[in-house]
Length: 276
Image (cartoon, rainbow, N blue to C red; front, side, top):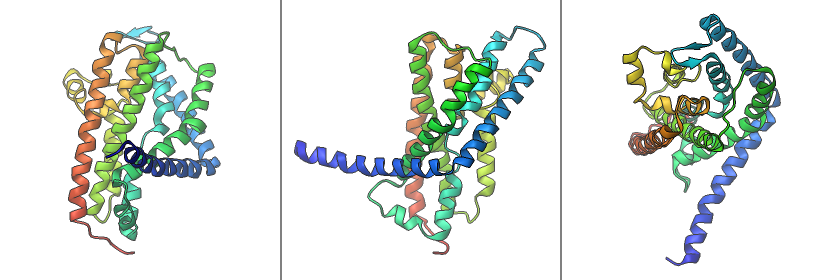
């Protein structure tokens, strides 16, 4: 294959991806009232968790090796980052299966999983611009956040957030494939959301778990969604441990993407479209 053919093939893959991201981004920016409600909800949660941790620390400056300031930063940033992560794919794919629109997705030249990945990227970019960034700036003035002084920690945090996004997406994608076999996936959606919220460190840091449960949770992929990035940010993961933490996240991204591909191939063979 010539260099020209390779370049043309690459452009042919990039253009649809950018189009899907742009369409998803534009769609999210239309619903400005929803964005305002999202920011308001985020700040309510920030203040709820702030006073919860102040009560739990009961005037102590440190508990189990973690300072109150670190914990407040963790809790605040956990709420702020929440809009970045995929959460509605189970509903979206289930709806497309019921209407029959899934056939159009399957027959596109792009891999089915990547179609929704690019859309999720657009959603997250919209959330970053309209919700996450404004909340972060406001939290600096009204919250109790302590920022890292090292540029390398900031870089590692950004990479960790990206890897966490991919873990969240592929987990969501794998669960959503159950819609090819089940007529109703509401229960799966709520079960998945509850498990992710509890085990990813989204709201409660994993170091509060009893030793046995913490040891178990630390080897599961859920920790890579939120806890890894937040732990890097507040210094719970030391600079020397950062490469191992990022490698853990990357390994789970690859494993889940492969499982998603296998699950999709199996789902297509069993496809039974209802309606449409």
